[in-house]
Image (cartoon, rainbow, N blue to C red; front, side, top):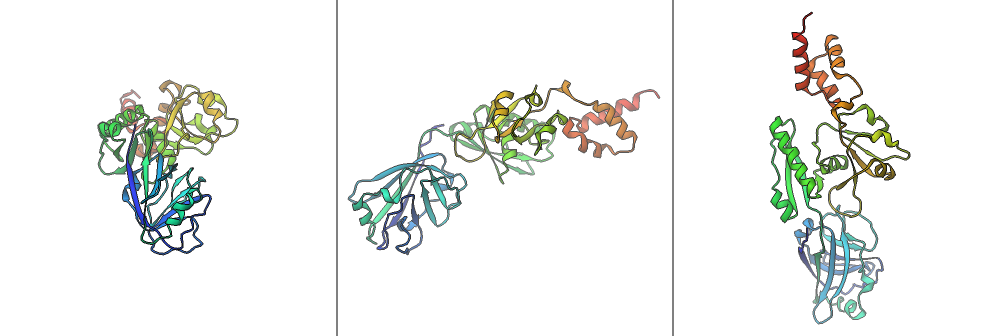
Length: 335
């Protein structure tokens, strides 16, 4: 989706400004600065809260009256916090004070006349931050008492939408949530979970429901959970056979942005992506490794409560509805 959002930050000069730092530049809301802060270009800066919603690659343009503007590009840090300072770095240091990284513009890049002008405390200086190019739509997900479905029109046209998932929602509501996730996935959406928790973000970005799923530290156990979506980081020498017959997604790390995006892939490509966050969908119904009906009968016969049993066996595909249907059928069988 193409975006053209921009904000303008306005500050003023200060006698101590040196503008000699080769790796960064900074605008601060503080009214005073020492000559040791060689990256600072403006004090008393009015910071725009609109910065919080910006994403992706941006153009940075510094301007002051009577001199040519100076521009560069950078990538917004998705983990930034809008505080009392804005720091732009040439490196990829993702601390909370850093607004953007991978910058082509630093304090040292300013022309001498421009840098000298910034020592005038009566001179105004502005930084325009303008989004460039296309970014994926972003679905912000949270959990609450009531489900609230996203407006797909907002996701497609405005680039973002909200989804609230109610835990323990009735089947019809849960199905509507899954449909919304599938439609969002079709748009190539990134998913950001209030938290955030990347394994859950990856699961939702694959269009899968949030319950149940398992995050595995040792994915060799994957075959023991055929009916459950699995999330893990791909280890070295993962056997391709463990992924047979299941849908697979891997995290898309090609862009620095909010949330998590995943891409469908093959088993061979997935095992080659060592260290990458991987989502593996549930196996087909006929690929179960155990006879769940026999297990359920044996455990209920041993006095295990149905509710406890469904909680234990849900990751293997035995829902409460299926269990009660099984027990009802068992009660009807002649002894």
